[in-house]
Image (cartoon, rainbow, N blue to C red; front, top):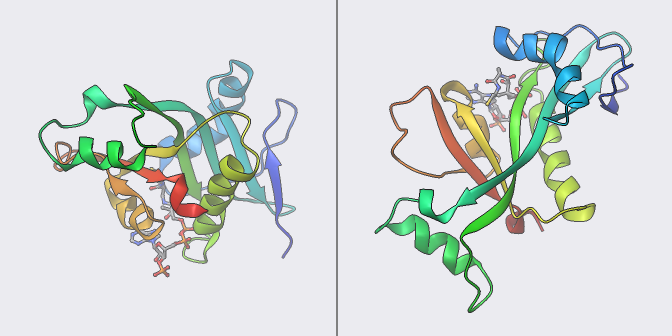
Length: 173
Ligand SMILES: CC(C)(COP(=O)(O)OP(=O)(O)OC[C@H]1O[C@@H](n2cnc3c(N)ncnc32)[C@H](O)[C@@H]1OP(=O)(O)O)[C@@H](O)C(=O)NCCC(=O)NCCS
């Protein structure tokens, strides 16, 4: 099975896709081109000749120091990772705005393949500084992100439907 890696363009014919989440399906099939043309998010897909296997949408983000919980390990964890003596009020990041694998292809490593493509893209081919990947992870996808090295940004969203998570790209080198 040959899978082509494609960056969405407004003329691209998006192939059928169903990741069993209607919001994500609708984003890819209805909204993604608009987000692309309005510079709000850039979407990439893996596809066979007749189906979209996975897709993800990326946009710029930042992790603000003021948003990190004070008086605990978070602020220190980020500060300790930075070059000696350098102070930051925020850290540049890339947000994974949407991410899904088609139901016929789940559990076969395609999500991890896509995630490694994202990590590699911002290390080998960086056109802008981005130290972290961020995601608002759906609760049921948290184990997937943990398996891919993501950590929780805060404990304050423990009871929420989504959890803020991040990945330090230095860990991928
Ligand atoms: C989350 C998702 C993208 C994972 O894609 P995938 O192609 O199935 O992922 P992989 O096959 O690379 O899985 C990697 C590992 O994560 C695990 N995993 C994947 N999804 C999981 C889930 N929902 N719950 C628990 N573990 C999961 C796999 O079992 C696998 O573990 P292993 O390495 O021990 O075998 C896919 O399940 C999906 O599209 N879910 C619905 C939409 C969604 O929640 N998207 C995330 C939005 S933030």
